Every structure is written in C-alpha cells, then in structure tokens.
Amino acid sequence: MKRHHTTSTRKLCYNIADLTFSITSRDPNLKLKLDEPAARFTCRASAPDVRLETRWADLSNGAITGNKIFDPGVSWQLYDSNGDYLFVFCSPSYGNAPYKAAHMKRDLRRGECSSTRAFST
Image (tube, rainbow, N blue to C red):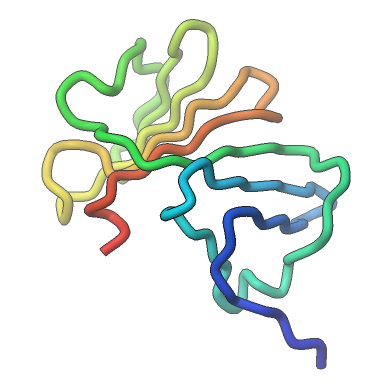
C-alpha cells in the first residue's frame, strides 16, 4: 500500500473525479495539510483544473459583500460578489462572523480562500 505524506506545506495538489486542484498559501505561516483519507488523493499537478490561493483574513464587520443568491440554511451561503461567486462558511462555534470564505471566478477555476486565525486553533 502506498503511503501518503501528511506534512504541512505552502502548496498542495490533489485529484478527485478527474479534477485536479492546486492550493497555494500566500502566508508562510499558513501551512496546508491533507490528513487521511484525503491525503490519498494527493498528486503532482503541472496544469490543475482549479487553482486556489489561501490567506489569513479578518472576516468580521463587513468583510462579506454581495447579494445572497443561495442559502441552504446550514453552515454555508452563496453570494454574487461583483460578478464572481462568494462562498461563506459559518459556525455557531465561532460566533456570528464567518470563519472561512472562498471567492471564486464564475468559471470556478480560480479563486481565493480566506480563513480566520481563530478557525485554525
């Protein structure tokens, strides 16, 4: 059985259902890691289908802008933000402010994921 590494890094790639994702951290202090079973899907990607950059951000007090276009009534909502998609993730454990947000281009091939530092602890 092939062993998959779960060390922290600033860039990782994984493939699920023939879609390859590349995630890169802008901040040297924001380390990325896939634990099992997700680590089984790591790969090397020269031309990923989806590119995400991650960063720390303060998502409180007006950081989320746009028109809400979908709200399934659970832990996330979808907004139209200047013609792009904005996925907002909330949890009562972290109060009223979102703990994570993903701002994606309409083609869903490029985006930026912002997380609060409180979520990492």
